[in-house]
Amino acid sequence: MRRALLFALALFSLPALSEELKPFSASYTADWKQLPMSGSATRSLEALDEGRWQLNFEASMLVAGLTEESTFRLDQDTFLPLTYRFERNGLGKGKEIEQDFDWNEKQVIGNDRGDPVRFPLNRGLLDKSTYQLALQHDVAAGKKSMSYQVVDGDEIETYDFRVLGEEVVRTKAGLIDSIKVERVRDPTQSSRKTVLWFAKDWGHLLVRLHQVEKDGKEYQIMLKDGTVDGKPVEGRRD
Image (cartoon, rainbow, N blue to C red):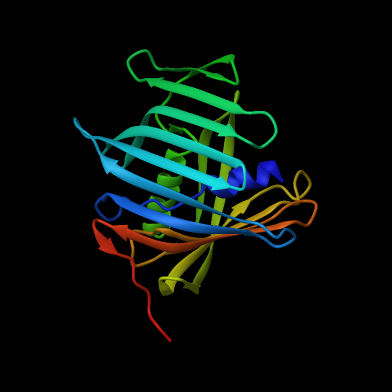
């Protein structure tokens, strides 16, 4: 459950580069089919100085919570992560991750729960926040399958996705035309399923995420409200 929760909370709205990168804020509700609990999360993107951007994310449910923050810059259509920070509390043992991306020395330096981490840094390597931007950029550009190299704890993992089609999602902000995407996993290695819906007309904001764990537990994240470049997200009404 912990792994599913962290993955679900990590995949919140981000705008796509096929449109101009714009600041945003969004809030979500989270529900678990088997458990009488719900949670909430907020995420925002803001422009900093010298062409840098910052993503901020906070989530809470009952006595648990997590925060995630990353900074990055853009080189044409390529995301270049600069820093990544993650902190979780209330879900068993706490967890802290720090990563610094040194593009001059071409290396990633940091720590994962106190253990030192170091990787060679090549163009295209992403952290667990900025890869989401790359995914939405590629979805907006019309790609049907995507693959990313992501620093995941003390390893570099490959994250694969494919587009399933278009679908209308009913949210508290109204009916939103969306692109449906699933994470691709080897069925001989994992029975987990993850499906995401990105808003076509709102910077490819994530509006819904549905996940099924290998034990059958189901989780869903739904958009409550948000703004993109200062404009409130508004879907169609019945």
